[in-house]
Amino acid sequence: MSPGRAGPLRILLSVQAARELREDIARVLTGIPHTLCMPDEGDADLAFVSRDVTGLSTKHTILPETARFYAALAGSPALQWTHVHSAGADRAIYQQLLARGVQVTTSSGANALVVAHTALAGLLALARRLPQLLQAQQQRRWASLMGDTLPRDLEGQHVVIVGWGPIGQHLGRMLLALGLRVTVVRQQAQSAGADVLTVPASRWRATLPGADWLVLACPLTAQTEGMVDAQALALLPAHAQLVNVSRGEIVDQPALVEALRSGRLAGAFLDVFAQEPLPADSPLWTLANVIVTPHSAGISDGNAARVRRMFVDNLRRWRAGEPLHNLARP
Image (cartoon, one colour):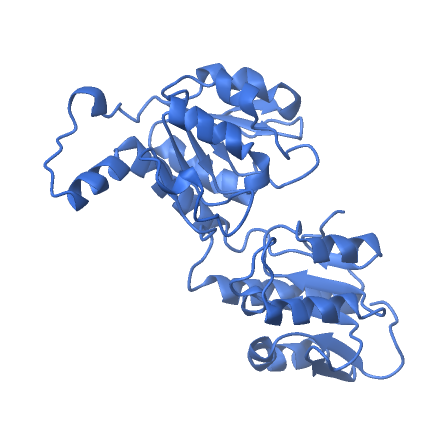
């Protein structure tokens, strides 16, 4: 625990989070005078950015209530540590806090299994031609999967997973159970396991010509931003399909649209985009071989409780002077 301002420890959080966490915080901070504060109630020492704070805001469109909370973070010079509900800390406000020395911890892993389920659902939907079948249903057209729409057996296909964090690991186990061959692209040199081929990020493009599926489950960093560009897409076979549950900025979106339109890529499941919300005039909305979801891969009814437990555990660590879990990097 680091010394802060004079007076009681002040913890910035939402009204909802204060109601849900008051007792847990009091238990962890027994013997330490503290107060729970909201935006516009003065400087804070610690902060918890819960899901209800960001609400429908995105990185690119920040709604007034979210902006008010962000302003409170930026306007707290005594702030020492902030815990955020998301798995990543790539929002501008978090990077600003990191730049001035504030510790920022994420909730990486809290929704990993849910995101992996979503990625698997997207992959299976594309594999079984569900977008085309749904379109036929809406047209009341009996469109049997024959001829050019005949699905390929999924067993034996090759999936390349970029990123071997909690999401990639959950998804990898599921895909192996379904009989797919899995190649893992990761920054670290050590093997991801005996059942998968591990390739360092420096050689990741070599995996693309033999890939049936490219799944993005990596964080947004200086190294991953724009990594799936026109050249990378051109290396994939024409029957290959993309699943992106990481960050939209990892993909060159205009190049992706062109690859999908031209038939250089067979399909895509996209939960994240370079601009969010996805503009209404984006061609991705109407491409028949694309499934678009609104950055919702990790949303479920159990996630908020898991995030709160992560915050409380880190609060205990903070009080004990122990290293915090899931520390973000600038």
